[in-house]
Amino acid sequence: MNQFKNILYVLHPHGDENPQSLARVISLTNNNQAELTLLRIIPKPSLSAYTKQLGINDEDIAQKIQNHEEAKLRELLAFFTPHCTAKAELKMGKSYIDIIHTVQMENIDLVIKETESNSWLDRLFGSNDMHLLRKCPCPIWLMQPNENPNYRHIMAAVDFNTDITEEENSDLNQEIVNIASALALSDFASLHIVNAYDTPEAGFIGLWAEQPEKLERQLLEDEYLQKRSKMATLFDNLKNKLGKQSYDYLSPQSHLVQGAAAQELPQLAKKLQVDIVVMGTVARTGIPGLIIGNTAEAILTQLNCSVLAIKPKGFISPVK
Image (cartoon, rainbow, N blue to C red; front, side, top):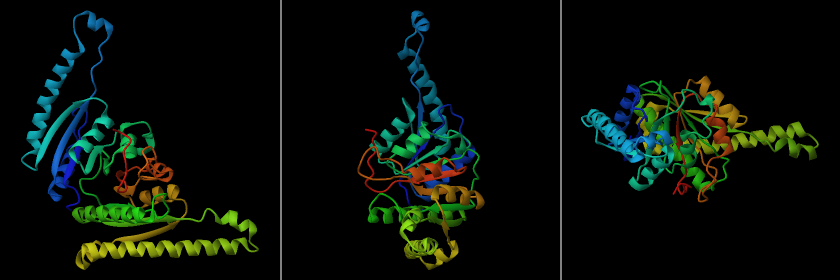
């Protein structure tokens, strides 16, 4: 695969590690010939006034908790080290902030974490997961706890109508396709490259047309041809990157679906029984605070599979 060199795996705060997730992380680290950092973040203890009256202070409790967790972390690291190059870190603090600080300080290029819920339908707004999707400067891979040890169906969702520049959009789409294809090849999975197209302005423009239905059909046809051309370019670039033999073996499938992406892509992911969706999340780069597009957020909250979210080059995290 060789897409990532420094991988950060965020451990469960209570030590309940999923064997399938551990196996996936080890395999991914080896396939990329990468270095792995295990990170466990635990909340700082907050004692009641009564406890403090007994002479127990926050620092003593924090040190005992840290010693206990470090011992558990050493045991887990001993499990990883025969299989891959790994180190472990323990931090006390706020989960998503410490994760992003680690990414920034240690040049992490991929964060892997299990979702905090078995279903995206439970809504992750305000959670650590959604904070990471919005603010983490590198790709973030959120795994479902019960996912398959090997993926069978992978979706790369590309977007040609974004608020970023055409060059940034092209680079982001190519990165999405490259990562998804590498993962599909390593897992012997099928790859579906998907784009949803629509002409929401057709109804408005049709108010001034003599034949509004004909105009709407023409606008849709023009939009389809434009998106088909851009998809063809993506596929050509992928073929050049992989080589004919690997490309033919992978045999990626193209899906151009008419309709709103927020509605069509989750439905298609469910229909195809997709194990993971690789997609972009950012509305605009270079401006802290403009973090995630409305369409991307609407899609994410409807998915019931793992997600690998990618931001374009130049993204600035608001977390400092």
